[in-house]
Image (tube, rainbow, N blue to C red):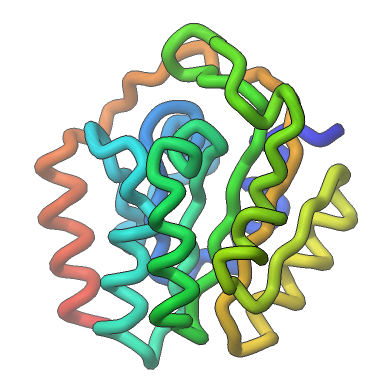
Length: 188
């Protein structure tokens, strides 16, 4: 099984020109630890809604690649988001779900994926045209590369270890991130 930080590091260069929306907690902290960019939006205090925000941006900006970096707990909290993604099918959106089978950011409680819930299967049943489950770094990077090139909605469930950063608090203020991201969208 891979580490989420290694997966993020492996795709980091490809995120330079994409519009990136992340969930709160470990994903946001680890992405920031690699290096913050003004095109990264860290959706704090809205668990379950990263895919919804990414969908809205993808529909408003069909000329730009949108990457949503999500987690199993967040997706499980808003399973209806998968049906909405499938309904509108933005061809410029890649939805990555880091599945560590736990709510790591709030204490490590197990999620339904720890007992067999298949998020890629749910996404496929919802109508997402391209769904994948990957378990190692090579498969993840190859699948992510293919998804960027496919020109169609993709959901990649990346099974990762249930380990995270030492802390979840970063130097980037939430309001500052909001305004910086908004300026970047206007300029690009």
